[in-house]
Image (cartoon, rainbow, N blue to C red; front, side, top):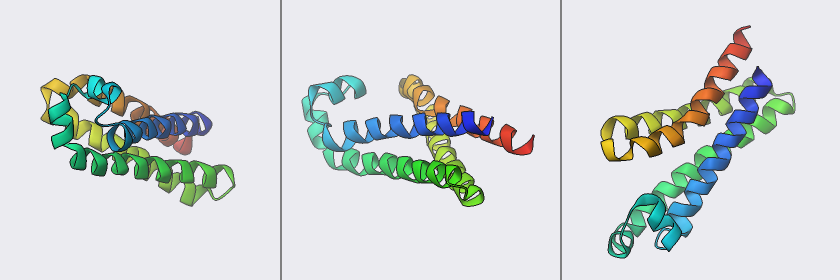
Length: 128
């Protein structure tokens, strides 16, 4: 079950890299605007905020992938701690979005499903 958790954590990290790209690199482009439902004017106005937020997503992905690599390399305690820190933070952010914005519930569920499954699989795998 730990292996399943690590695969799910890696998938969650990959999703957060995509979110980073959309928010920090492609924010004013048509694809990002369609994804986030912003007008060109709104995208331009919020460009700085999105840039910063995108890096939060990237850093969570990096911590998670580093944890997976360390876990697989045999440094299981540190690796597991980093994976749970990264995916737990992703999940917490998704919960904040879910509870704070009815309009963004679908995005919150998309953002939080893989981290939730990763955390559950890791914890079940570690206690069994």
